[in-house]
View 1 (cartoon, rainbow over the protein chains, first blue to last red):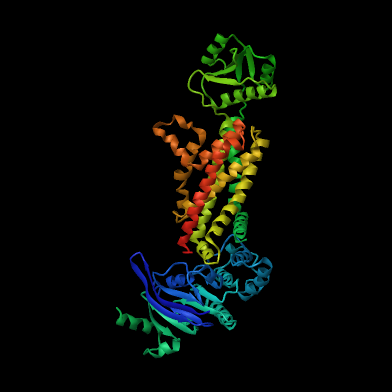
View 2 (cartoon, rainbow over the protein chains, first blue to last red; view 1 turned 45 degrees about the vertical axis):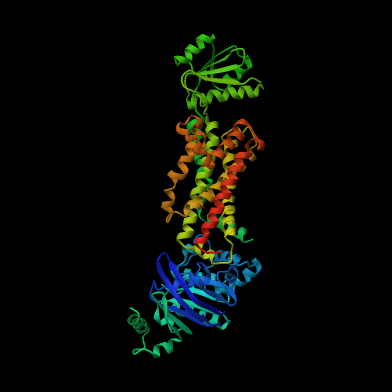
Length: 238
Length: 338
């Protein structure tokens, strides 16, 4: 699923959060949004989903103009924090989110096992989420984003607070999802995750500093460090 | 379908959360029992006098544990005034009059109830005129407070549960996540209202059944109708509770709405007679759902009215539900513009 962001700006009250964002996310790529906290990553993601409306500019997913209820049917969204129903079992959480995409019960049940096995939660799926560890909740949250077989996955800092081993596993899952033809947008401020994206956009102070393959971007810097890219942009644009 | 799935999720969540479940289903019965014990079921042996009444009535009243003497009318009134007897019952030719010295929740209730029972049992047509030597009549026995308490309990508990669970959904951001699925805003609100409505219904049935069969509260009209009123009131509590949760950032802030939203409604529910209030304060009751529900409950439970008597009250409750549902659907725009 191709995502076109065209001259998009967003203001909250008087503060300009995003200014004139232009970028194109290609079909079937893992696209990283990288930048310090407060740079505007989450705002951009919320604009793409249609949670908020842009002041200027347009966003298109495939040929759907955002915001649109139809677009939400093909988007799987994983918010920054887990956002799960603690009083329900993992299984019931997924059943619920699946039904919100209009999935039928029989279809859902079939899909559930696959998704739960993918995130290695099948055995714990009947337990209440309140008994889960942080990592389990994160994985269940990812499963909830995957449940309706979306063609576009939008993941807001999916690996924050997850140990390196689990993070590697989750990234394996992302690559597997890509091989299934999905487009994935990921925000992160962990620089080593950027290396695993096909392309990245660097966001700082509400603008895009650079957007390309990470290797290409790094070859422009002296020390081959992502931080340099941010520091350079500060020097040009203080 | 999505609406029903949301309702089902709410139901499952509450069933899994035993504390909330107990608050909805057991706490009302507990509170109601307490009120019953405090106001209604006293061991007090009342002592009254009569003049010129049918012997069957006297016998019936005596069988209920009340001592009945026979006195002349003047003497009887004098003794009531001097607190020698609790009440004086006499026939003044036009009907039966019951004289108390002053209003007393326990004694007045006890005596009035057994005389009313006697009249009902012996199918006497004439009504009993109650008089107080000091103070105005405000006829409040357990039965008269009972219907008010049914309304208040139904509103209060569902208001808290719905409001708090909405705040929880906001703070742990499940609401935001839900709004990022292709569900419509009205489906979300309707699902919530139905989900909590299910518990409202369960609560009303349990509370009414308990009041009628265990506490022997009399319902002159239809108990089903009383149940419907309570469910409508509880539904309005869901909508109002979720509306006020918008202004709360934590569960505790939700509690801060109790003195603003709930307590005034208790005062205006019919516990205090509204037409005697100064500065036309009674008019405030018109913006309070508990007032409409209680006046409908009073009509059904005390006066024995039916749908034709209470439809304006029911309409008002529907209006509250509709108004706050629309407001809630609009406020969900905060999460998603469409």
